[in-house]
Length: 157
Image (cartoon, rainbow, N blue to C red):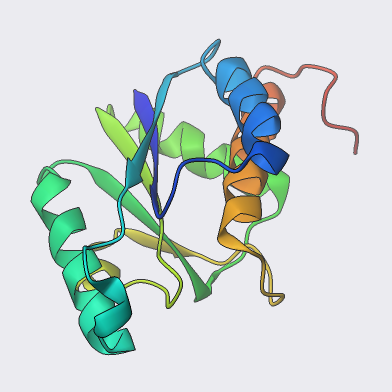
């Protein structure tokens, strides 16, 4: 199975880049992994929040394949413990999924079309995090999940 992290916005900021790259490389020892940074639409500043989300959503939908298992990050989603996340990832691998795609929305979140397309909606927390920090958090949590699946020492219970 391949894991992909998709994020709307700019490339990783220097403050998170090293951590994101480190945890991504670690995940790569368990699953093939990649990041896709989806640029903000041109003239985004001229668009309403709704129109911007819609344009971002259209781009995401164009990039997705019908057999991709999509996890949308959204504040209204289901929260996981680290162990439950590991079980969730293992279940997707057991289903012989080719690709598991985690999608981080833009400044105003994900369009309803993406939330409808998503196979699962995940909330990291009831707190609000900067999108750059979310990238680091999901890379680390997916790595943690991988170490749980292999019964390695990284995760302490």
